[in-house]
Image 1 (cartoon, helix red, strand yellow):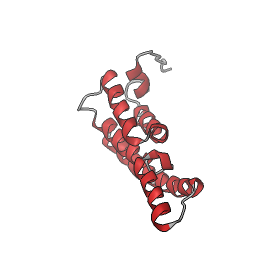
Image 2 (cartoon, rainbow, N blue to C red):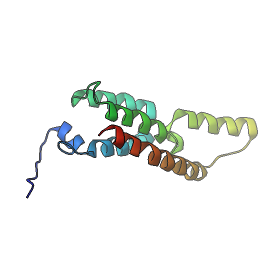
Image 3 (tube, one colour):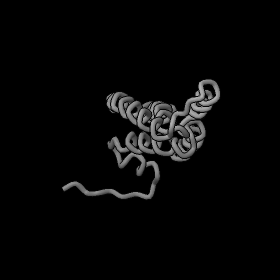
Image 4 (cartoon, rainbow, N blue to C red):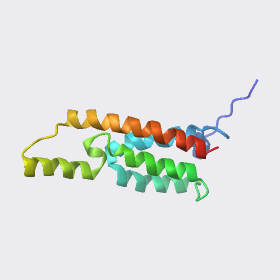
Length: 129
């Protein structure tokens, strides 16, 4: 029977232990969710600092690509996910006197984000082998 290994080391937690792909799951989920709260660029700036703290280097390519790709597509999920969404919504309102509701934006954004995630994630798993 395989012995379970628990550690308080954040790098092991992020990776889910040695040989696990939990790191990509963690990066994907945190990028998709936290980019909605902080917007994509500020989130990435903070997460880069976190990556450095837990020991990521330039050789951790899949993890860096996960952060880049998932935080980028996270901007599509909700209006606050990226500053460009707000700019476009304001432009529509000012120039064309039309509103894109939060609900309409999330409905379209969720579909785009889901499709992109389903494309990117298998690629990230593949390059992490």
